[in-house]
Structure formats: C-alpha cells, structure tokens
Length: 254
Image (cartoon, rainbow, N blue to C red; front, side):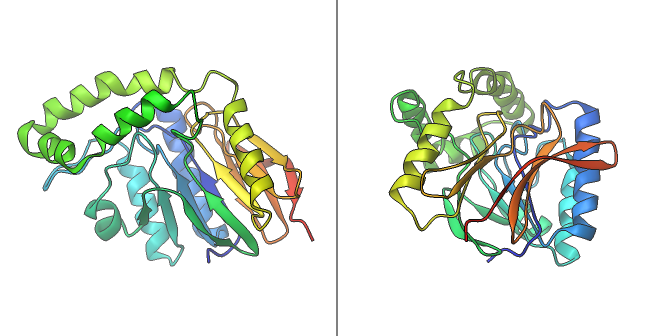
C-alpha cells in the first residue's frame, strides 16, 4: 500500500521539456519531500531512458537527485514504465532507489483500491500497430543489440531522432480513447476505486458509472499539472510558481 498524500506525475519527457518545466518538476519533488507520503511517476519521465553498464542519458540529473532525496527521506517512489522509459534497470532501482514496475500496477493508495497504467497500447483498434512494434522494441534480443552493438552517443542520438514521433502522434482524440478504456474497465470491475493513466497528455478527472474514479495527470511537459491523492479525495492540481492550486477534485465513494 502507498501512503497518502500521494503525488502522481506523468509525461515530463525530460530531454525534450523546457528548462523551466524541469525546474518546476524539481521544485514539486522538493515539496513532496515535506508533504507527500508517496510519489508515483506514471511513465515517460524521460523522452528517452536507457541504461548501459557505465552510461545513462545526460539529462534530468537534478530530477534524479530529487528522487533519490525523496527515497532517502523515507518517501516511497513508484515508477511505472512508459513507452519512452521502459528500459529501466539498476540505476533507477539500486542507485536512485525507486520501485520500477513494467506493466499495470494494482494495489492501494491510502484507502483507494487502485489500478495504474501508463496508457500506451490500450486502445484496441487504434493502438494495434504500436503493440506489434512494442513487442519488438522490448524484446530481450533487441535490448541486447541496442546495448552492446551501438555506441551510447550514437544510440541516444538515434533514439532521440525517433522519439518525437510517438510524442507528436500521441492519441489525437483528445484523450477520449483512454477515457473509454477506463469507463469500460471501471464498469467491468466494481472493486476498483481509482484508475490512473498518463500518456494521452490530456488531464482528466471523472467518475465512472459504478462510482470509481478515472484520473489522468496530463503532461508535465506541457503544463505543470499533477494528481494529489488523499484518503478522502483525488485532486487535479497545477503548480504556479510556489503555489499549488486545486483545479478539480472528486471524493472517494462511501
């Protein structure tokens, strides 16, 4: 179980994000160190993340330091792999100390029975070609070849040249596809109180027909928004300088 208040952040795309938004993310993580019971990174913290034996991409160093400081302060950090950072390893788990999870995560946040997914590949028809590509990119042979046959500088440049494609061609339905997926899942599984997504870059907070809540952080890349889950409610928040504003909130069903 993750304790509350729980901060949920997604789609910062460090390496493509502006320096201003990276500073805002560091500031939010410093705030979480004093205020949060747990932090969830719901995928695509980096535009591209890969770990060689002695090399990692050169970006987001201050963010990694802030995450390590959170863990050192006793705040658990759960990182759900996204489609841009699905190749995490010992740097994240051993050196930074986060819990790195590939695939759906199911557990509790405070009293909320929760399912977390980044959101890539979930739309049945629209994402079918991507699911085939994902199987290739995540295959152990592909990972081994990328790690051992390419120089890290060249490999990173190659990845960054193509990474913007998936970001720029993210779901163009205004997030409606993932809202539909969430509504169907919440209706089919009334035990779920909370279903969390990222990926669409469209923030959302809505209640399903059975009373469960669907929430999407939106993309920190575009605007510093995040979710704050307390025992009583889920809040969609924005960061404006040092001030946090609650844009909308939904209470946990009785």
